[in-house]
Image (cartoon, rainbow, N blue to C red; front, top):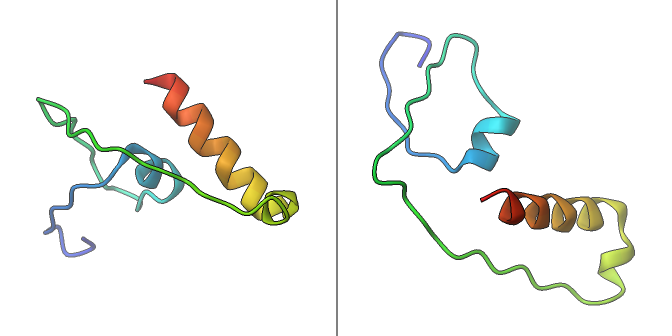
Length: 64
């Protein structure tokens, strides 16, 4: 990418978290859709990082 060359297809969540400076995004038409399933044991849902990840996935699903 830093050499001015590169193409990648990334989900919106990945683009939001890491976007190299100078990188340009283009929305694909038709949009690429996929099903994401998150499973967790009840005890793990109390771990802050796991809870935050599950929360962000849930919010992203509602946005679409």
